[in-house]
Length: 405
Image (cartoon, rainbow, N blue to C red; front, side, top):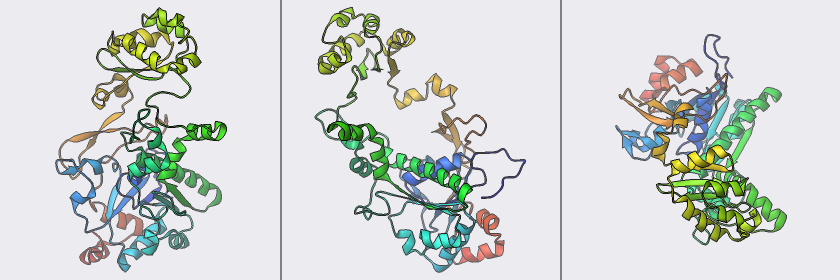
């Protein structure tokens, strides 16, 4: 781990060097967390990759928005590590790195001569973060996984969807992104452990297991009561009412009602407070279909903003507006917390695009977004010079032989 210069503003992971072989979404989303916290994340790509092959569309000004989103704050280097010279170059870089990350199928890096045991022998302090669909061991380890497969195999898809309906993928790629978050969390834990032991270690994160971990309540209910949790839409197994209800112009979430009688008064339905079918939470659960129909009729009489103004100040329940993505761009709380930030386009292109800011609001060492996505091999010369003290002549020789770009 390098020591930051005293004159530089301190970031939590400043001085940590990450050699990042991850691609698509899961791995890059995880290493982006490290980059936002100040680590120098160097994205390793193949020299022969065409710029438009770096990510899916849609493209904005020729830039893949898919690639742009999870690769901010990183630097880029191109190495053909399938060649002996490229492999040796990666080993030299790994000697100088604190962390190496990859999300290939298990065994791919070992077949390239760059597996954990090889690199550990070169750098015992190296933390090797391997992210895959099903982990480095086990009967599924050979299988490929994308977001939807992770959600399906890990249990979350089986819990998502309407009662009696088909299993439904969560609308954001939690199969990928939660795995990426566990990758980042595990790396930070391994960095702390290295401070205590002086040794690096292998981190094995599986997308399936990251989803399984999200099913904690369903799993403990299965274990304790032999329940068989399944899809129930936005309902809660233990609380009613719970979920979104239609208003005159949108939707509002009502949950965790603490004072039922006062809540009924606020929505102009005192009769529901006296109805024995709704008097207790248990009774409301037993008559949840009727309860939801009555509440929908009541809440459709006013707009979302009107209900929010009436119910939220009374603190009788949790209430939330169901925001669209467009709503987030105009939400005053999102603006006050600076949660949408402008990130400049790469390659010197004019303009910027908005991305979600880091939600980690550290008071003394906040995350910072200082760079857009890296160019394809845009930092190769700089990285090889700073990390390996290579001369311009030596770098040019490798480039002439198509080992680097």
